[in-house]
Image 1 (cartoon, rainbow over the protein chains, first blue to last red):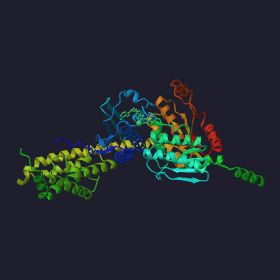
Image 2: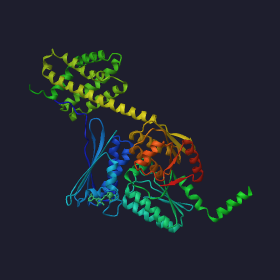
Image 3: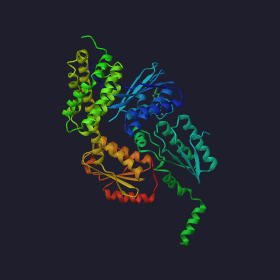
Image 4: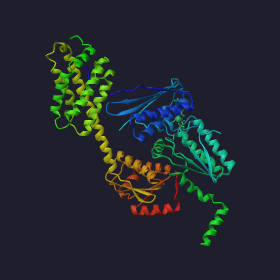
Length: 141
Length: 134
Length: 277
Ligand SMILES: Nc1ncnc2c1ncn2[C@@H]1O[C@H](COP(=O)(O)OP(=O)(O)OP(=O)(O)O)[C@@H](O)[C@H]1O
Ligand SMILES: [Mg+2]
């Protein structure tokens, strides 16, 4: 018998991102989980904003995909992790894509670089032709 | 015209009160609606009340800035009012600006900001006459 | 040793409940004399005992099992409550470990022998769990208090109708600056103020991060329709700002808080309503 971990990771919630209305749904889901994780209002707002940017990228550039959101805990702090995945064209030059103001379309080029500043943890897995996977997380204080 | 966001007319000012989480196509529709309403009503000012918005991301931010820019071209001035502190902090961190849009704490102050420009010729003359009479 | 079915363990606990519970209550009451009442302890122990039996009936063998969700919930609540009341970690865990005293009372009953060792182990794990949840509850309380202190140490005051000020004193770190700035922006809304003064006369030095936070606050306030003035910048800080190449651009700075106030009043008269973001 081992000592019980205090941690409990609740079930992962998954949403498809195929239309504008799905981006709204992602925001609402992330907000609900962020409240459960007891993030401060500012941290909630930052996380939801980042999620909105990333879900829109999934839709617009990734040609649609899905988002997984979960409440996580390390036994001491709780947090929210969200993963945005698509099977679109991928990003050839990641450094460039992460530059403030760079856009291949008609955006402001702030989605990726900005959302990186809004969350605690941020990582991207992408390659040309292999889709894009962005993972973010923010923890309660 | 969508009715997700009501546009009210108060005197020569349009009041756009965004109370719901806007999806992108609704935001674009709103942008068109405002421009159309300005020309139709001859409004000289637009107040966009975003006190109901829980976030302003790059898309909504861009929409607000373009409503202001289009209004300017149509000879109407825009004031964005009621941004929540958490939203403002987040926008700054995101790196988003509103590109020179006027802002005010609430609708009332937004109206005050637009007011002087709205005085009709009669208003100006009447006020002057009243001052004289006193 | 052959594993004893959890169902059997539950039955042992039910069959011997009076004996076990009496010894448990005595042991715990002994340890916690003066900290809590016997009646309270008894109520608490009833909840724990019932949840333990239920968990075993549902097939639970390890504390982390889903079958023990309810039990863990009860223990977490008890620990958190104790942490709040200022119990020591020992005083908190001892209530659970005292159940072992109750189990030792079964040593003479042949039908209970097989279940004794697994039950003792389970109680050990429950005790440890209690200890862990106590520790994390304690930490949460401490960080809460630290945050409250932070808030208290940074008063945002209303100077005049429509004008709020925050006099900063002492060393500014990034965390504190962030708290202050958030509070300042909230106060603008609460008091309906369109002018804010951040006075840093009492701040000996700033680093890049803190300067950046100040700057961001000014920009955020403008997005909300309010204007910030920074007053009382010491010569060294001015040097730092320039040396760091931080763009203070069109941010209004004034020598003293008084200057800033006069200016804000003047500004309030000129354009009472808003700003350009
Ligand atoms: N999921 C994705 N798949 C493929 N390319 C992507 C993906 N996400 C981002 N990109 C590329 O990275 C660029 C930068 O993305 P970012 O979100 O920062 O800006 P944007 O979407 O162009 O504008 P904004 O989000 O500010 O409106 C995009 O223009 C696009 O070329
Ligand atoms: Mg984008």
